[in-house]
Image 1 (cartoon, rainbow, N blue to C red):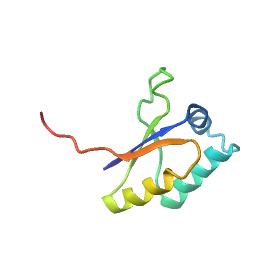
Image 2: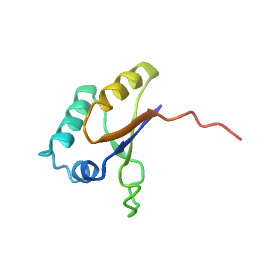
Image 3: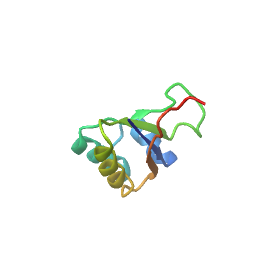
Length: 90
């Protein structure tokens, strides 16, 4: 399962540069560390600024996902966090 996370542009930039002095990037890093999860770029090779704020987190089950999403949505700089729907054939 994957959680999709959208960060504000400034928070995304700071997080990608591993600059945790900004409060939002620091709080986000703390939430991830406490959960034992890693935030990964959804479009790592894209130079498009509109895509640079999208990330994903791999989780084992829906209960963990719900708790992490609830916590992420409280972090300043997080614009959205949701469970990615399952892939289905058309």
